[in-house]
Length: 79
Image 1 (spheres, rainbow, N blue to C red):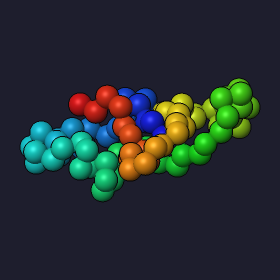
Image 2 (image 1 turned 30 degrees about the horizontal axis):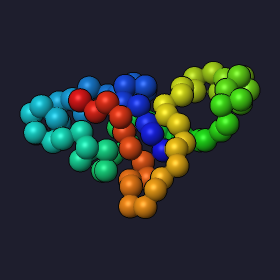
Image 3 (image 1 turned 90 degrees about the horizontal axis):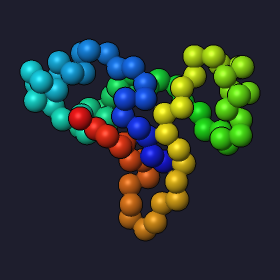
Image 4 (image 1 turned 90 degrees about the vertical axis):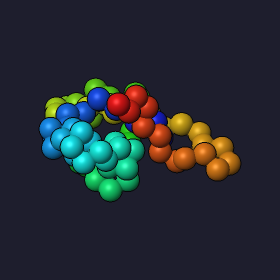
């Protein structure tokens, strides 16, 4: 899967940890969910139906084919 950094709101505490604690976002992603919360996967054709069921839902990424030893989840656009 590819997830787009910035496509969901994050708590300011993570920016503080990054700045004051010198903790990279890549490390925080492996420990915390960074406010992403519950996620589910659906076909793009189901977007309208999803918003009917969960108006607060946001598209945060997409499913992609993984080859060999590639990471199964990649976050694009990390600060």
